[in-house]
Length: 451
Image (cartoon, rainbow, N blue to C red; front, side, top):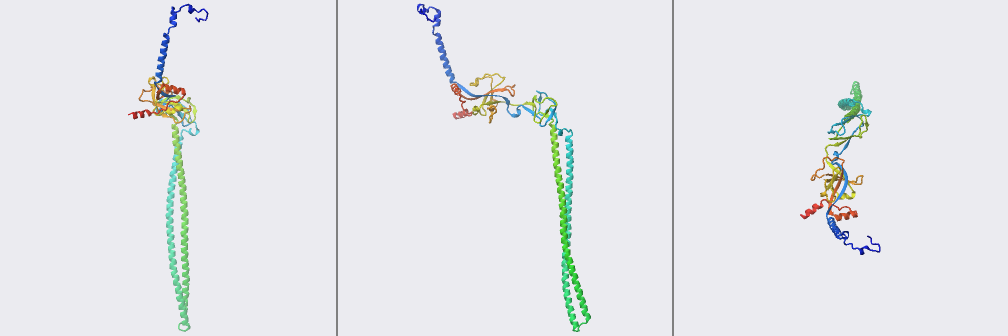
């Protein structure tokens, strides 16, 4: 009752005799509740001083440790048209197995005898190179013959020049002798004429001396004429040397010009032969590209280009393949503020999608269903999602990762950091502070100092 009337019942009636009064106004439940609050507060205080492992979490997915083990697509280096498929989705293929056959769609490569015709052109040009080589050899022989002939001709003309000079010398001596003879004949004639005037010589002696003088004068003129003729021979021989040198220089230059022209044609033919060999090799390689083969052992995931007769450009994706041999890893992302806390070799706990787990972030040892990993790579440039990518590999010292784990599965990662009291962690979370800076080798250094 509320006891709001003037007639108060509790003053007229005694309630202590009733059981309800004893149950309602007893103090036992207050004592139990107070004890409970005290014990709870003590437990909370104790819990606040328990160790708590700070951590950095991130979301990612399962990938492979090396890029060549990740799912890939197979492209064609040339444009073409799909003619035949040799596999189905899900089939296992070994390295080099044929996946599909394609045909050409460009007109310049559709000739089925393209390689044979190119080889024929190459062989014809090769024979042309041989012909030019033989022509070069013939011109070299001709040049050698012309050079030898010029040497002989010059030697012959030089001999003539030497003979002409000797004749000039001989005729010059004869001319001087003729001059001496005419001087003697003149003196003899003069003496004979004087003696004839004195009557000591007959007139016939004077006439004989006059005749001899005239003969000597004639010989002098003949010797002078012969000397001039010899000198002309010297000049002619010199002119002949110059003419022969010019003539054979022209022949040699012409022969060399023809040889250089032949060599130029030979080099041009060799260049065309090399070009045709290159084309033939390219056509052979291109023909081999008509068969799309598996780059490594793996499983066919999905055919991107499907129908027969479907055309595609070079570089387009044709089919996806997943390598059969791979080493699993986890690709996870962390916030930039937590990046300094992650180091190579850092321990990571991983929870995979599809594998049930019970995880306590502060007590990793009490968790169940998580797997251990180690950081093997940290990206040095931020990703498109605004976070940094981290690659985690399995920890060989812990339990193996699930065998049925597939590439692309989701993963939740927790990087374990420094141990701190729970009250400090709550204070840090309430104030929005980052986890304590953690150096992975700090503990090892402290252990060494203690030792």
